[in-house]
Image (tube, helix red, strand yellow):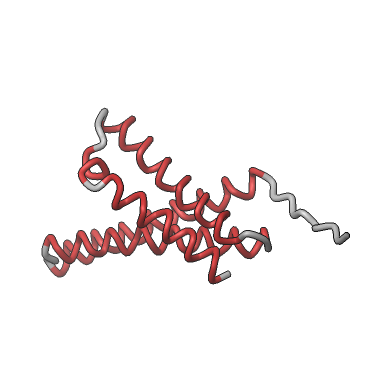
Length: 124
């Protein structure tokens, strides 16, 4: 009987990936704010750009995690996307004392974040 080799990934690695995905989010949001200031973008374009930023950040996180783990990559990517969403909701609750923007499209944002992470894991 074959024995599977399990890959142990430290929790610190997950935290680093999550932190870097939030740094990537912050940089992309700053670029979006600059574009909004300089170009006067419309509300629909900004909303679409924010969705793309969520998906790109979770995709990156899932991709890096999938490269490290090497088995069941899509599940680890899904976990990273879900953790990203969990932190997003937690920070929104702490700062606003309500879900605010995330609350309006709670499940849509959850699916986008989790799906982006899972896609990143599958591609890795």
